[in-house]
Length: 374
Image (cartoon, rainbow, N blue to C red; front, side, top):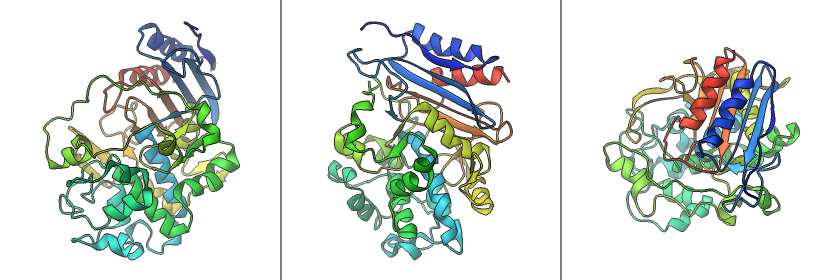
């Protein structure tokens, strides 16, 4: 198999989106990819094509699922918001009230809101650890709890690329008694039939697209201790992509699904916590989830970022024209957003990764094409 056509559809008036999707393949910047969009709860674009493996022997079809890396974070944040009302003080609850070990080294007053908005000062391990700890979520969260923060929590923020997921996973487990991936499956994706999982069983591994990793590192700007701990040590990440990595839950990084599933989940951001006619997040919890928590120069990433409680806000216009859009990107180029003013959600997923930290050119082309049709 050497060529595979684009499949799917674009609703009338959205044909330029298909043109943009095809252009990404014509320029040979894709291996396999999917792009989907919902408007007012209706699927208006569902496109997929290319190959699910590096040998180009397996076509990317409607059942192909793929890791979306950090685009997982806002979905995990939705899951936390689904259970947060069990706490009388919600996001303002001190993490140590739920997880006493976390209060070590001056972190006793760090709130859930501060932690999930990347203010806790724990972007990675400064001192050497066995990278295998990342493949044991309980051990990893236990290793993170006593760490000293790299800055005074609540005074600055810096992106927590991996640690964020282990920390939020522990919080959800302590609130609800179930793992975050279990809550997501039993309360959100399962009842709605949405093909997305954090913790993907072996029975689904044959559907997972192979990843072609980027050939160059991203531009991380000036390197500091926080950036180094987050990205640049020999122990900064696990071996991604194996069976164990797929099966465990890493709510910051190993969500796996289709483009339409991701777009449907980000639709909760476009519709005030509703999925179709089901309210999955209370009005109070949704307001707390989506309000701006911090904005300014990121200590880990080389630009200004704005975070709500686990989801980015579109402060620099990379995710369409609406500054109130809730959004995120993932390692290698995946992207998703929910635009509450237009009732729009979309997602781009792929398996040929670039070295873009945000606003991968392929995703940008698709987002611009879609907004250009509206």
